[in-house]
Length: 274
Ligand code: 2HA
Ligand code: ZN
Image (tube, rainbow, N blue to C red; front, side, top):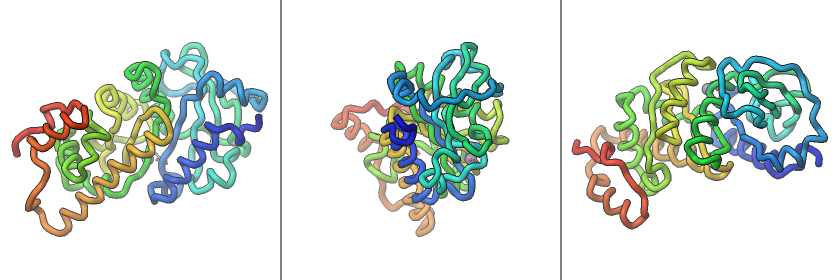
């Protein structure tokens, strides 16, 4: 089967374009990766032309021999739908989980996303924590979440609680909460380690003054998670722009009642008295 005809490749392209249409991917901002299923690798492997092995820049031994579809470094999300073969690549990891090689894509040269260490370390943590279910890691420059990182304390419990209060669906969509990484230099191992530590607990990590990482089982769930968190942040930005204090809001007891009816567990650490 032609690469771009495969359903998982089409899902990847659609998600990249949806993110572009949301305004989260100025220039070459953001990146997306998908851990490809063995049967999906089989569907498309006639297209593979393996390149040279190169160091990942970190070690992900639990992901040895896995295949990933990833956006390219310096590539623009707005171009993915027009020319996926130029913007995206499929990579294979070696048996140590320390090196990768491109097996398809980036037809005009290039390398996988500059955030490859963060993507792969997040994949490793989320694959283990979810019993193999999580397959998508998504990084976007979400405007309202970024704006909030200038005015809220950079604490997991503050971001989680404020975002939960902005829309009733939020605690149901991300009941574990969100983590916050302080400002760090992007692209390297250090920020990857900090992010993947938070991903042991959460499906969402906010990068102060930069954007967000989200993890999920498939394209719909992961895009939907990013979208829900960012929409909640947009409501909070609007609310704070009208007046600094809430006249009324969802209270800790309301969250506890919601948790019972919607059968989610909401950690008490986020239901503190203010
Ligand atoms: O330019 O978003 O974090 C890609 C990025 C780096
Ligand atoms: Zn970024």
